[in-house]
Amino acid sequence: MATKSYVWFNGQFVAASEPIFGPSNRSYAYGDGLFETIHAYGTTARHLSLHYKRLIASMRMLELDIPNSFTEPFLANEITKLLNKLRIFGSARVRITVNRKTGGYYTPNGFGIDVLIEAKELDENFFSLKPKGLSVDVYMQNRKPTNALSNIKSTSSLIYVLAGIHAQKNGVDECILINDQNRLAESTSSNIFLTKEKSIFTPPLSEGCLNGVMRQVVTDLAPQLGYKVYCDKPIDPEMLLVADEVFLTNAISGIKWVLAFKHIRYFNKISRELCTELNRVTFPDQFREGLSG
Image (tube, rainbow, N blue to C red; front, side, top):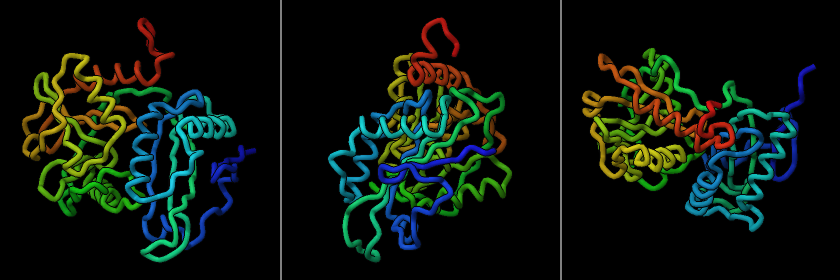
């Protein structure tokens, strides 16, 4: 017999098969919402402080009411309760979706929120660099805007959907998005990094990329390993032709290294080193000195 699945909705466990939104839901009707995707392990959300800080900042930008009870400890506890309910004790993808309550058309009737938390078990417990790197292409058909809303994980994700379709049709694993200044922004599901010798480059937030949690973790970690990080310099697409390495980061996968862009091939030395350190800071009880997880 299949195990019954649940989601957390406004403080209650609800069977995943039960409808919780109607057709007037503002996230569905207008994209009036945002979400966080968090890696959890052992029923504990990882890097939750960074996720929570970004979530609250984004909610304020969208002028959503934030209940006094909606604190980081509250969120941590509710995620743990859901994972226990689902009996997921290894690694999990946790998604928190926040949308404005139903009411109004483009102009809402209020600023209250609905909160949905979902969780799904992951195939691997920790971050691992795949033996084969990704193949990527540049998605040119639609540019990502460079404004403050571009840094938010909005439920309006059409450009990522279309870039994903482009990747699928062209036989590559990921697409790199270009901003309205014709410079690199990010990929369909991750922030992008390029390396040259001992220097690491990633587009600044002003270039329209998502304010990624793993992007922040990597830019904090890399200098400790002796690398110079540049996260304030715009990156032209031509740099893809001369980079030593290209890698992508997100909270679920950690680091994904890129093997190929057109005829160009890349290494993965820095990617591999950073992946090891990411495991140590993300799963400290499992990756202490002398342990391999």
